[in-house]
Length: 334
Ligand SMILES: C[S@@+](CC[C@H](N)C(=O)[O-])C[C@H]1O[C@@H](n2cnc3c(N)ncnc32)[C@H](O)[C@@H]1O
Image (tube, rainbow, N blue to C red; front, top):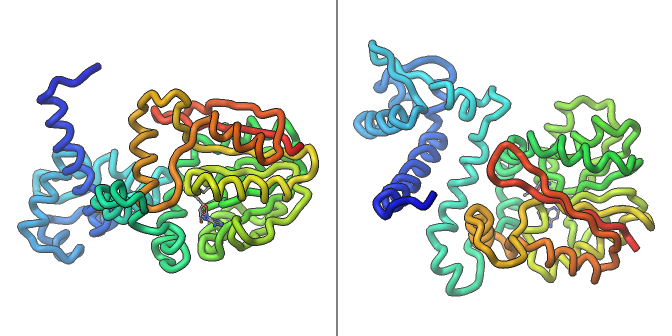
């Protein structure tokens, strides 16, 4: 439903303020401190190292947003919402992702420069290469995003019964781990930058070591990906690359597949007809602040795949429990 002008203005101001308040509270460790035990405002201010009056205002805002609860004797604790999303022991924890928002925010505040110059503000690649702490947060933040989608994608890909699979830009490896649980004997190669693989290894170990998993470090645009794979997955990777680098990546992936092997591209898509979808358009703008990429349309992928030596292209939309469905495109190496 179309908002009224005053609802629109209200939402504009509220969205920005809410987002900054929650991201800052997360960075300050408010939710970590209160996950351990209830605290008074004074004790919380001293635990997170903040001014008491400022902490009081922050706490009021978090109570108003249903993220904290205050008991009658003034003790603060997490609400059920923040216990689910912002307590580190919860499987739905999004704190890693919110710390990435701090980095994104800087890029967003330079959007005007990005649009005028046509050049990104940050370089994701530099951050991944040079900032171990950032890399850990960024990669771990992908796990909750994959939680619901990974089993769905694995269910679709298992019908080919691959005996080997290459996960390019695997991140925490969620999509591959969902696949290896379903395909007995699958030999899995997880490929990513050396800094990222340190975090990947943690997630893989958590899943036990009973599977045949190789971690392979390198740059997917220049280093050896291996060869003879039945299936190669590129999940939420292609949108980080320019069209020119994508072409290179699709050709390199093709060379790593056996004849008849399949590439699978998974992620968000722009619509082909330029109709505006808010989530996709805003995400694409965001990508332009820290990568050379953007979202691409199904038509753009299909054209590129044809040009790079693939045939029999198939497409599926993957609904999930958010209103931002992802999409998968498969093609066979000619
Ligand atoms: C958005 S994440 C996607 C992770 C995972 N595939 C998923 O869907 O959850 C992109 C991944 O690509 C990796 N990456 C980025 N540039 C790379 C490069 N040049 N070579 C290898 N990996 C790269 C990053 O380290 C990160 O793990």
